[in-house]
Length: 441
Ligand code: AMP
Ligand code: GLY
Image (cartoon, rainbow, N blue to C red; front, side, top):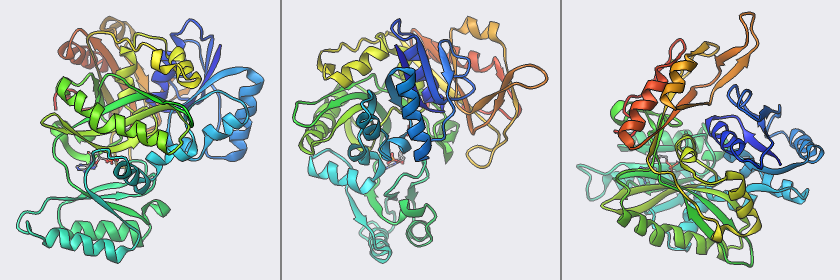
């Protein structure tokens, strides 16, 4: 069969690669794809400008004409804009939540209300649309009983903000300037006019990606994948500014059996009951962003898709056919679908362009020592790079902040780490930078 992956990042390269492993899959189209999916076996890029209704209608036409049997959506923006509803209305099979369910990621106010309503364990919070009320709450927080050493206050813009919507304010000055920027100056556009003010939680973060099959009127299923961890700060030791993710590992060694049980009881099961009670049509993937302390999990956020870069570490551990999994999600047989995992671990550090996460260099040629790379057994998933048919012959050039990930399997986390960094050592481009402590922070 032919399949389509929507998106252009490292996650989509990993999804396209995993789908291409399936004997049933003859061809993987990627819209728009990147310089990695352009040359991946069985894959072909299809230009499309997402977010443009005419372009989406064109894509639906392409899927129908080409006889594509399954579409998988990578990023959140098309999901939040309702691409799944429109594909289904056209009679097409697509993995992802409908527009209503996508609100679990697209609106923090909606998702926090959902968590409260269904008893999903999460940080205490209040929603605000009035900037002066929000400021008053922040003042009370910083002037309250722990005024000498107050906890930070977590400020979350309601809407999608491409990773820029969460600020951890250490004092009232920082809180005030953030609230003014979000709620009055419109620094995030409409996404910041409503905010959630949330209690600060301590602990270690864990990402649980999962397959979801929930349809109105029938019993739903959520099946978690092996755990993963993203490393969001730019520099080693968790220092520096937040990024889209500097690398990932799977599984997470410190996510104990007790913590997994707690996650199931306090977060997964109430989420599933809530989805059923709300009559959601959610047939796709979900991402639980957890804070874990002493084996007790709290939910920081839902993402209504697979995580990036967690996908680049989790998919190589799947010992099953990803196209079959998608079919089970869509046809309601997920409960009986066995999720078998390879033993060992994957480490996937990300190489970024100089300057990232600020403004960064672009257009630098990437060289790769394929022979040495092959010896590491690692795989390069391209995120921000394009193919260039330049005079010196075709090659890759950097085109984004996060350029690529080296995803390596090992018998254990240490071997995966060693192989991943050997693999990164085979890659070079001007200004290339990466963290050395992925999986060891
Ligand atoms: P979110 O988009 O809600 O996951 O927030 C982005 C990042 O902010 C998370 O990955 C955490 O590192 C941090 N964060 C969010 N909420 C909290 C919280 N309540 N306490 C501490 N850190 C948080
Ligand atoms: N790794 C976090 C995300 O995908 O949003």
